[in-house]
Structures are given as structure tokens and as C-alpha cells.
Length: 383
Image (cartoon, rainbow, N blue to C red; front, side, top):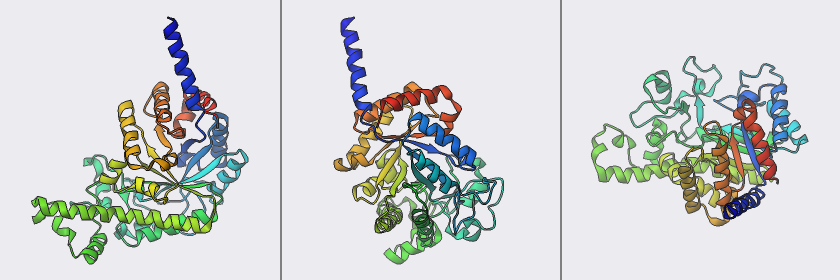
């Protein structure tokens, strides 16, 4: 009995030491809570009361803007067209000592199957910018027939179309230069999966650069089953896809540094950098290692502790040791009990990842018991 009591006491004291290392406790806030002063006031009050330090507030969902943009229509969710949610949340959040990160859905563009996009939506104006897959099917066609599709996230902009990154950079630079944000947070900064990346103009650009026609390697084409040729093509084309997203990150990083503003450039990324690089062409470990990204937040949402820990092993294998402090662990709470969530915190901190971001505020506001436990956790993880 004495040994058991001693062991428990030692475990608790170690946890207290580990928790005390946390200085950043973040929360993702979806755009539905950014539509009015009242709703913003509510989540700011909750965040302060619960002990969060950083809020990642969604300002672009599906090609719209929850801010005053010169280039994008304001979200239809905002009832008062004169209201600027991002300015308001920055002003009021800073009064409470909260850091505000503008959460921007990057390449994902549209997911409403029931109606066509507005006339001024970028999908309506530039339909040629969207993504295609290796079966020569574009995302808009898929969305309209998505009853037969699994794991389809919606219409994406193609990173390979030469105009897409230019367009996105205009929007991202506007946010950095026009708003008093503490951070700019990119989401969906990737391809939808390994079968995507065959926008016609993007393939033409590849042909102009390498004199290899990607159409020869599309599903059903004559060379599809030529293993050696296909393997060589895929290696080259995979890097072509990675490079397109790398260029966006690097150019945005260069711009941010030239302005010399204290804006933290971050991204929500796939939990395993190996999976991210190989299947989504999101080489986020390189972004961190090269200093293009200030902060990566792996969406380590697995309910299984082993999978959660395996993802951490992948992170430590690819991210340079001196850059690991630039990784905050993203942890889901909608899909697991509080005990499971706290175990993920324990694992993260014990593996030298003391900072975390929770997905999402929706659970915090709906489950008072869960939120109260998070408040107690955040008190233990005092900055």
C-alpha cells in the first residue's frame, strides 16, 4: 500500500512539473462564432475564463471572408454588412491579453452541393483554377455527384495552376498588412490526396518544364501499368506538387519578414509529417526546418494513444531537434472523453511538446463539464 501511494504521488508530482512547462494553450474557433459581436464576446469571455492564451479564429471558410476584404465578398453568415469580425475580435481579444491568429482555409474552396456559388465567388469567375484527379474528373463534377464518393472534402483550388498561388498571396498579404493580428494560420494548405494534382493548366506547366506529358500516366492511359516508367514519373510529379505548395509558403514567409511585423505564420497540418509529405504533398517538416513557417500544429486527432504517439515519433524523426519547440500539438476533443484527452496532453508533454491547441470551441461551449475540466487543466499548466 505504501509503495502504491508513493508511486501515485510521484506520478502526480511529475505531471505537475510537466504541465508547468506549457506556456501556450490554444483553441480553434469556427466561423459560426465569428458572425456577431455577441458571439465573439461570449467566446472571448469563455477563453479568458478557461485560461487559454491563443485563439485561432476562422476568417475564411469556403472562399468567403469574415473580415473587410478588397478582393473577396464578405461571408453571408454576417447579418450586419458594416461589421468587421476580425477587427472586432483583435481589438477585444487584445484587451483580455489573448493572442489572435487569423485562421484561413487555403486551397479548399467550396462544399455546398445544394446550390451554385455566388456570381462573385472565385469558383464562378475562374472555374479553370480548380483541382482535377487522375481519372480526369474535376472537383466541381465530383461535388455535384458526391453521393457515390468517400472522403471527398469539396472543391479545391489547384496549387499547380499558375494563377492560384498569386491569388492566395494577395489575400494573405492583405490580412498581414491590414489587421492587427498576432498570427496568420493556414489550413487545408495541401492537396486533397495522392490521386489529385492533374489540373490541365498545371499539367501543361509540367510539360513545358520537363518535356514529359502527364497525360500519358493518367489512370487508364497506356503507360499506367508500366511500373518503371510510372515510378519515375511519380517521383518527379510528386516533387512538382510539393514544390507548388512550398513556393506559396516561402513567398508568404519572405513577405511577412520584410514587413517586420510580429505576425506568427502557422499552419494546421497532417499529424504525421511522413504521411503529409507522401500523400498530401504537404512537406511541413521542411517548412519548419527551413524557417519558412514559425509554427506547425499537427492535427493529432487520433483517439488511440498508440497512433497519437506514433505520429509524435514521426515528427521527431523529420523535424530538427532545435526546431521542435516550433511544433504545438493539435488535439481533438469532439471525439474522445476528457480522460482520453488529458492522456494525450500527458503524452505530448512527456515527449517535449508542452504547448497545445484544442479542436474546438464547439465542444467547450456545449459541454460545461468538459470545459470546467479544461479550466482546471489550464490552471495546472500555468504560463
